[in-house]
Picture 1 (tube, rainbow, N blue to C red):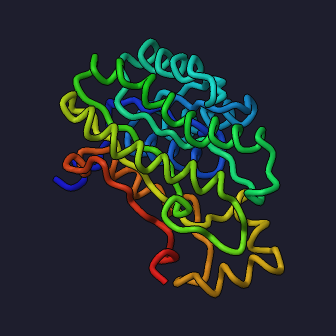
Picture 2: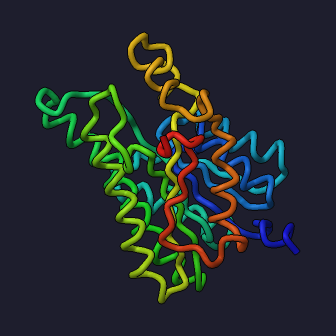
Length: 257
């Protein structure tokens, strides 16, 4: 019974930023559990390679769509690819995003706008594009990748634009969960902590940032992208059928201390 609850057999998912790192890990996990996956990524080489690996490793349907998440039409093309290629859309993961450190008093307006466009508006555009397909299917699950930075102000970096965007994603998730519950559409978010890879790895090596991160970390290490996938599978599958509006924090206890 439990195994069946976590199965994604016969379902189709879109994962933005699915070409590498966390997005790729989520896409591979969904495929392993039986889903067809549309990898939506701005990087063609990464996106195609991810889709090809899914098909080769798991034998399930996989496709790549080039997508720049601040462009609403790119989300719509990803949804269309899912419906045309696989007949339906069941899961939409808004994973693609950026991070940077910039002082509030010094950052350019262009820096602020770029962060909001990608990390916040890009998530909304994905939710909006998925809505009609979910209505046609009779239900759906949206998973928005937020961050522990939407809950706490991480120090010693200064990143008010990033923190604000991620906090907005968490509240957008809750708002849409309430609004769309009548359509049997579940909307949840995941807030990861620091993960191994290009976004957090250099920070750990920073002589100022790294020691503070480790001093505040309960588990004294960075997480691995695959350690977020259990939460994503829970939210995507029937195992999480009574969850909506939730923000699942997977940060190794960082925000507890």
